[in-house]
Length: 563
Image 1 (cartoon, rainbow, N blue to C red):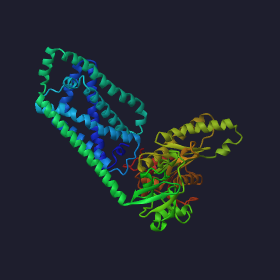
Image 2 (image 1 turned 180 degrees about the horizontal axis):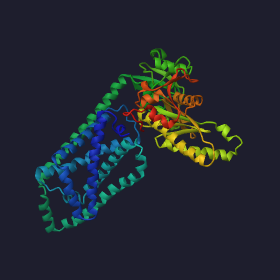
Image 3 (image 1 turned 120 degrees about the vertical axis):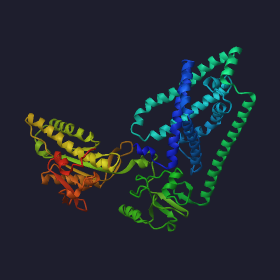
Image 4 (image 1 turned 135 degrees about the vertical axis):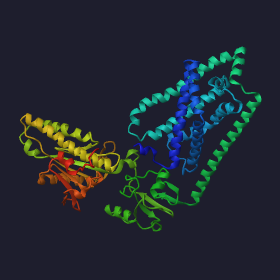
């Protein structure tokens, strides 16, 4: 997940890194201001320490580079957008980002530039006197809120893909509200105190001398620089708008008209797939595999213009053949219209947001474990139903923690058996987790059988099949009542391997796919070929008499199994 946070183009990574640098600076700046609520010495003490760091040549270079690159890349991303349709949070973040320079430019010139050019002592007191009691204090307060809200939205959009962000969000919301409130309270408290001092003529002269107050001519120069900087900002904004409009006009000249039966009609850029055209124009279009051609849920019937489309590729033809699609049916994710066409969406989303989203089906290559209790029917014949349920629950209580501790999740219970999937970050870790879980289940079963023996009950034997392959993880069931489950040939193979353990008298069969994915050399292992029912090709697998012996069977001194 850590690497996923930094996925994307170089521009995206630079924008994230620069935004983080600016957010950290803003956080400590706001905390610094808030200390005015307690005492002036605290406020100035932290500012002295903060300035010693932020005005070091290298740190200053980093901060100003971050500021310019973040703003420049944000404008570039707006200019390159295909449409201004976007989620509310994204639109709000862009608007707030465009409003920030209107006040930030003036703030930087009156402080940092004044310090460099005229040796002005730009302590908090100087800044507050500049703003108090006219409208500037409210404008700078708004700037504070704009910067903070913009940064918080950016941080949320970046970290929401992590597993821990949702858990911490309720607490972080409190911090997000506290920081600007604390800063504004500090500004108001310190502002009232300093302005009362400034009203005293003797103290006013001391303040002016202490801060090396700029002369009227120097203020006028700074106002001129501010006006020029604002003009440069408006010019940049105008260039961004012209580039966006120019790209839109160019795309319109190189576009194609698509008519959807039952509406609407759209104009989209040539070169895009029909599915991408739908998504770019906000047209609901089901596509559970995400547009990879691995399903047919995005298929359309081309009512007009089919002759202008190239024939289906091998991938598209195979998928359409699998569902016996009639002539004229195409996959929206595979066709790239260059001439006007009229299409009918075979599967139209019913308005349920989750039912039409691609995340409803996610394709992964993962390890699955099929486990079954041996001789369950004979063992429970004549027993009372409650006693049977009690035994099953004790059995699952004993072995399931061994699966979950290694990163596995029980997908479903099937009477005296279960199906587990190891949904880790990648295929290798999934295979290793499955292998370790199989061994841990064997150890857990030994402990449970020792307990049964002490009670005078017969021991329990199991069979397990462990395989790795392509799976689709998605919701199966009616809208509002669907549960997440897994589907794929790998499930069938694991089930068939488990069934083969009965005749072998083995506790576990591990497919070669799992072993290879875990980095284990299969050439030195005594694998057997199994012709499994419902599986076209023979499956090579390693029989293991006792699951606890697995590590000794596959590991060399350099190879150990770990999740």
